[in-house]
Length: 111
Image (tube, rainbow, N blue to C red; front, top):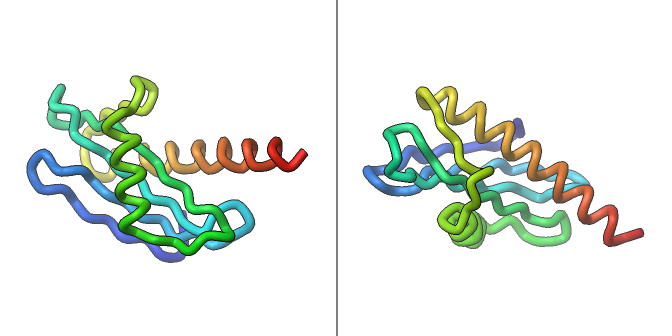
């Protein structure tokens, strides 16, 4: 997904945090937060924070934004994963989707 990534597996009832440091014309980095829902062992609500290219990437700020979005998340950001690898793949797909939406919104604002 990118050249610099790191993953922190959550402690019990803690959010899962994933940073994807992308530096291009669309984003300067992405932070994803997956919060266990309590509905099942492998069920997470996800939030995504995308850093604009003109901003400095800040992990702490990204975590705060992504976690807030995850905790207030709508049903469509609910992810069910069978294991860690499955969760990573689903987060990757969600991230790519959110980056495309972010880029489309930026393009429409410029027009």
